[in-house]
Structure formats: structure tokens, C-alpha cells
Image 1 (cartoon, one colour):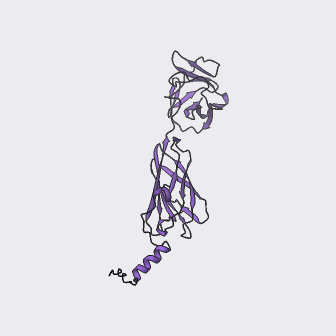
Image 2: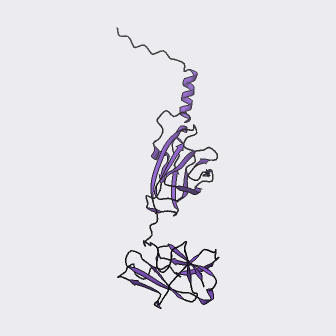
Image 3: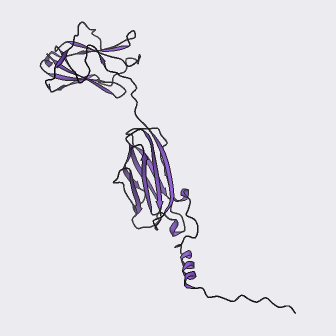
Length: 275
């Protein structure tokens, strides 16, 4: 005679089991590993190269799509490391989000209501030195646990002058020396840019001069002699540019600073005292 198997005795579920089941049902207890970084936080930044002092944007996206309470990120901490750079502004896609970057190179953004509302955050970054700026975003859940991290590198280049200017040649003396010259005379301002760069090397409106206070510094006389009446010339034999600066007789008894602005954005000065 066959016997039917005995049914397993029923057990009443204890309070811990009931709380665990309820927590799981409402997403209050994460029973799986934290979501991967790419599903919690994404970070975008230009690879570069970006010039020094040229603003660029870094975007931080927080989808907050996890069904688990502990898998959502209502807060993100962002830091810039490497070459010097500063966060100058932060804009969020949703009014519920706010940011604070008082430290300049680091800060946080959070949901004001503590909710997992999706957000896109746009940061304006200004690099102030050459090198690599690394942006790192750590997404934090309501349990203050980092559940996602994203990084992005941006290469920053120092501006390199297009022209290798090494200083003025005689008869002009380089700053801080003061050149003494008779007002109304033409001064041959000579310099080299390490080769023929053409005659289109001056910035718009350059050169210029402005009156400055005479501080009593002993001035070195400038022997002008006979000079060409043309403006800018280049002598390939000596690799020398010459700009003939025609001074004004009305400048007698005053001091001025001569500015040679080049098209690469650089400005080179010489100081003059007029007799």
C-alpha cells in the first residue's frame, strides 16, 4: 500500500521576515549590488585641447531610474583635480535641484526634496593653467553611500606666442631702462622674430604710445641718426624688423611708453623721456 508524502508543516513568518518582505516590496532595501556607474551617473567633458582661460562645459546626468531606494542618487559630489581650474557656474535642468560650488574646484548638487528626480547639470569650467583637468562625479544615494562614479579628462594648453620675440635691439634700450631722445625725431625700433614672418605682424592700431609719469630714472640717450621714412621693414640679411616711430615735438619734457603690439596678442614695451 503506497503512502502519500507528508505535507511540510506550515510555519508562521516572524517579524524580521515580514519587515524584509515589506521593505523589498516597497524598494526600501536593496537586495542586489549597487547599479553600475553608467546607469547612475554620466559625465561629459571636451577632450581638448582647450586654451588656458577659455571656458568649457562639463555635463553631469543623473537618470535616477533605479527601482530601488538605495539605487537612486538625489545628490552628486563633483571635484576638479589636476591642472588648476574653477567652476564658475552650475545650471540644473530641474528646479528641484540646487548646486553649491563655493570652493571653486569642488562642490555638490542635490535634490531639494530629497527625491530621485532625474537631473542634468551643466557646469562652466575655466582652466587657469596648462595640463589635464580631471572632472570626477560621485553619485550618492539617500543612505549617504556612493553608488556610481564617472570621470572625464580635458587637456588644457598654455598659449604659445606665435612669434619668438627676444627684445628690442640698439639703439633702443629694453625696459626697465629709459631711453632719452629729442622730441620730434624718428626712432628706429628694431627687433627679431627668428625669421621672416612677413610684414603683417602688427596688431590692429599698433604700435601706440601713452604718456606716463617721469620717475626721475636716469635715461640712456638714443642715437637715431638718419632713418628710413617707411613704417615697418624687414632685413633678411640681419633677420631684423625695423619700425620707424615718428615722435612729436610737443612731447618735449614728457615721458611716454611705447607699445609694440603683435598679431599673436603679445605686447612689448619700451620707455622714453623726451628732451
